[in-house]
Length: 342
Ligand code: FES
Ligand SMILES: [Fe+2]
Image (cartoon, protein in one colour):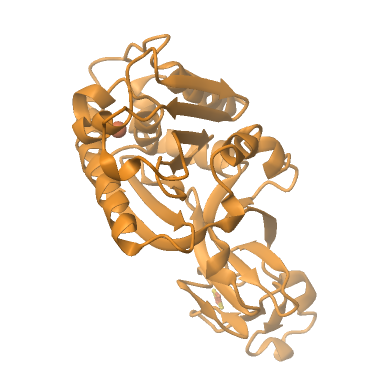
């Protein structure tokens, strides 16, 4: 893709319409809506969304945009009888219905039925909650393809519990950050700790792409990193669901971390990463894994921010991808270009 697409506000606007308004995106986990009457606010690309568990226990996702004048309705997470917009106090039930709008009784023909929150698609996979603003889109199951079956070979996703969320902002375009996730060509150069644990050599480290999914399989090095060896999970898997969802399982005890990579602006990216573990895993091991992963994250931050400073210079039209080692980056770029052209 042309490097100009990595800094251009017009491209970001188009990505909003043609990518993020039509794709499955991770927004949070079922632990955030465990009780009837609970909700959490999140984002799908730059689209504000709110997920609720209404009184009868059913899950919903809505555009988190007030039908009155467009203020974002809910923020954070919690348990509440209703969601009230902070601007003029229009109040919505957790099933989306407009319950009250001050002074609406003085409005002839005011039809509250028509002014509920706009519902979007929601599906869960284990404890993971995804939404898709496009009501016509194929199901999440279809989008995930073989990933659930591949993951089931090393871990039982339903047995995992949320432990920790890491949030970050990066001075880069969201696509730079996704592409960084999609290759391990840089691992030997930039991630000494990770490369000591996982065999990142081209003959050992496997890359696969199919449909909307890209996967990376790295075997654990013998005598590598002691805390990752000897658990129930024998090897790592790293999956990416286009456009912006990354999922990691490291060897060791049952663990999974995942989250979205979303635009905050043409050259600014937000991320959060939710960590899940089997319920009985000791906090020391959890802390060790998170510290290991955060070190990789610091190394990647320097890389993606360095790429942004280079590509934004505007003097070179594009880069050059390696057809083997960077095949998943090429796959990502093809999907983006197709979506933008559609
Ligand atoms: S914008 Fe929400 S009540 Fe006015
Ligand atoms: Fe990296």
